[in-house]
Image (tube, rainbow, N blue to C red; front, side, top):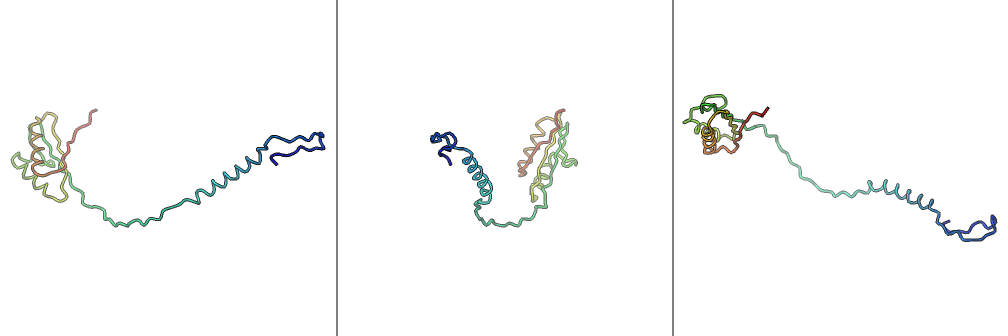
Length: 140
């Protein structure tokens, strides 16, 4: 098979063949490779874990968004309605008491002084609003 004698009748020489025939070894390796390719996916070991089940209801109440606009003259508008400077903290406190608490989006005019925007932020902070954001226009 791997080592053998040459046919003595052909030449009359009785020498030992000193080469290994690789064909049967390659055949065996290919058969083993095919067997491993087929059996490895079947032999996957899975850990059985009992996962907890949860029943959750989707949250239907979204917190509303308040838009506080400050125009170039420093006038305040809450959701497009004019609000006086002295009543702004009271209105924001009433909104902060709601459950869930609304988000406050501040829109400041490009020409407004920063002082008016800072007053609006301070009033929102003192009222207890936790989510405050700014709305800007994208640069073209």
